[in-house]
Image 1: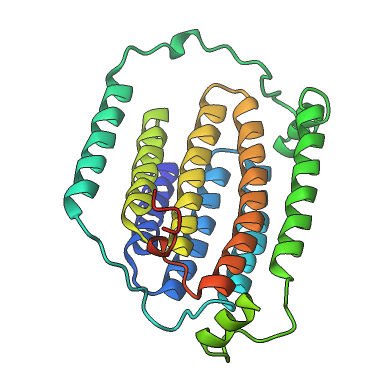
Image 2 (image 1 turned 135 degrees about the vertical axis):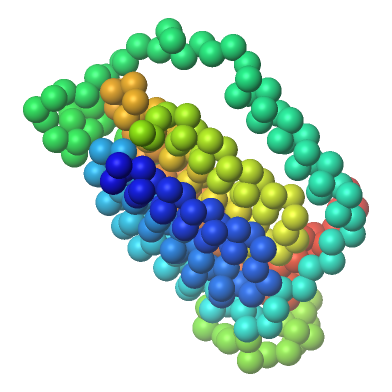
Amino acid sequence: MIEAIAFYTFAILTIAMFVIVVMSRNALYSMSALAAGMIFISGFFFLLDADFLGVVQIIVYTGAVMALYAFAMMFFDTTKEVKEKNSSNYKVFLLSGLSAILLIIIFVSPIISQKVQALYPMKENIGNTQSIGIVLFTKYLVPFEVAAIMLLVAMISGIVMASKRMDESLTLKVDEEIQKEEVK
Amino acid sequence: MITLTHYLVLSAILFCIGLVGVLRRKNLLMLFFSTEILLNAVNVGFAAISKYYMDLTGQMFAFFIIAIAASEVAVGLGLLIIWYKRVGSIDLDTMQSMNG
């Protein structure tokens, strides 16, 4: 019972937050709604007995990724409304309809999941974090290390790209001055 | 009683919201937000399958998706800042120098 209440509450909240993200015209509102949606998503993970995943979701997404977005938004002019010209709504509706049909086909298609066998079954008396550690550092050790290298490469590239000409202010300058310096 | 289907339908709904965002928005920052929604929707599906099949592989994939999302954000925002310094706008319509 409590599981159902929690599920529907989190589902409604998450969908509402993500709809705000997609529909909002203000980038700041959009980012705040996205951060809230990430926290609600972590509620699902706790509900699904994936405690470690929920904690990682909160730390990485709301802690690191959202902080990165907030930092990057200092470079952009976020106070003004996002102006977008949508040339044809027709195209968007066509593509959305196609994706909906695809989704229905996926759901209706013959279920092959009866054959699914657990590769790394959960043990009864071991906690979630411990069993994840065991699997991650035995079966998934190589992907783990590769992911670590990938994160290192991404970090270095982010630093290099974002720190070019960091010493001069961009928002206080007129666009033409920046253009002129680019030509030089 | 909440079954696996509930979670999968929710995951599909969230994925569709992200898909609409990707199709509809023209601002690149908003496109990044929509991408995050897509990745999170998939994560919910993986965690649900991991629970209902008593298998840890789903959670492992969710971890790697989170790692990929973090590096994607780092690289993408770096590129976005460079583009903003060069052009002064992060609208998709400004990226037409190749006339594709």
